[in-house]
Length: 71
View 1 (cartoon, rainbow, N blue to C red):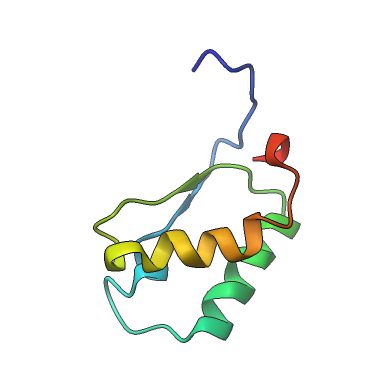
View 2 (tube, rainbow, N blue to C red):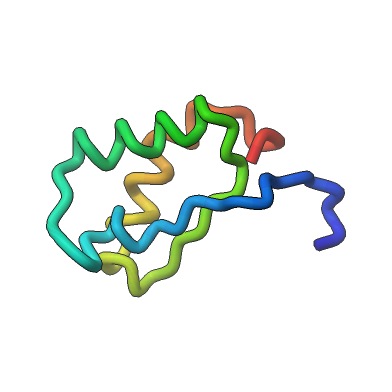
């Protein structure tokens, strides 16, 4: 992109957060996103297909606590 934002080579795909493959409880989903942030992941991917917004909501719950220029 043209933003100058640097992201990690490896990203976090949000399909599992949207219960696409198996049902995932909120606590586990949120802990997983939090662990990714603390591990240094800065590239997160979500799409409306992933649980009709569930993945975006779960990402947002954690990522709203992180400065926007960090991911």
